[in-house]
Figure 1 (cartoon, rainbow, N blue to C red):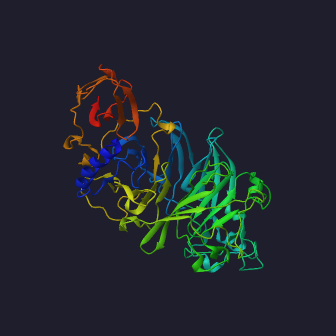
Figure 2: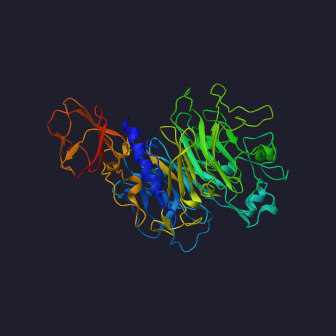
Figure 3: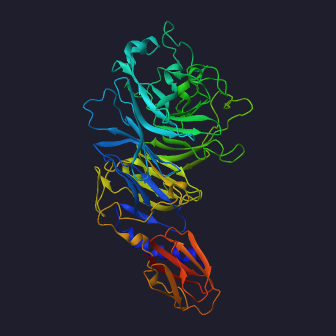
Length: 552
């Protein structure tokens, strides 16, 4: 019997018991198939960022001072620093406010010490939703910028679509912390077209100029939050920016190799098109080259390059994933798009009817059991993991699940927070009580964790049920030999009895299934001083024995 098979049997016994009563925290855990790692979440209505293991135990927290809330994303750097977007809820008035509003981006150390902070929340501009951390440490930020009714109408906006006498088009700002300055920017306002009024600016046909943005495309009833960009990602191989624009039901790609001046125009940069759109996908109606049958994105979130550093020729080069929120009135899906940049002609190819390729998704994932929690009208995320599994978060229900390549569920979790406070196990949650913008899993080998204290603390939920991760191996007859570990719990040296011969291979695995020690049994105690405190599993290959011990 292989070690992994033993663990699988053990977990069957554990999760069948736990899943019948658990309502929050880890609901299901197939230890043999789940991608090991730590899950980063920044739930709404409270100010703490949590790093959790797959059991739901707290590994680390970054607490915040003051009455602040997510605004909305958070990322872990290779050094273990945290970069988060947040907002101050003590501001008496917010001239610019809509879903996803932010205002502050800051970097804090693993120890939660402030390294730098950038704020933008005025009556003219406001940060919102998402950021992207560049390889050089700079940060791309999405922000609204105010345009008056007069400016909008002069640009060609239909006055009937000015319900609040203003517009908030999106811009992208690149912040350099070392200079404490904005060093690059892109404005949607510089790339407009309209066919409403020939006597106003930007007149022309978007059908002939899909690289431009139709100023009168409106799916938000004239609300000034006209675009609502909710995700941004960066590809260092292409030097391009991916933007999710849900009110257009599209994703856009723009060139980052431009100067600020080129980004405001239509020429320049590596691809020769300035700041115009290089690629748009999901809803050809937005550039008058299709109808409702051609629409494939529906208020999508978390558009990201699956492997942004994948080199040219790699199967994952250019591949994009996203959470497609409103596919139907009660169904969300996760979709993958295989974009195909033409690096010879510096263009993204189109079909013969001028729609951008590809014609369809390369992969679609729906919840295999049609769980109603898997539908989310907003928020949410999707992440392809190192082992090929996909981690999915349905944000309005704080419900996360991981599927393998066969689209079988191997892990489930519900964020155990209501209105900002941890709740007890067995509490039933409804929609919007545990809103969570995203969940990202970082592998155990991620450089952020090198040299860090990763000893599990308590569970996030109150009155937790640890059975789902308590490998009760004693209930199984796993070997014809009785292997005794003593002392148990162990301090620094491990001694064994019951091994019939020396030179037997001994393997020790941590609680995530990662082999941490392999040695030959010499008949003498051996050191485990290098292991951090925690639960471990010892495998005797030759005798097919398996035992659990605790390192203090």
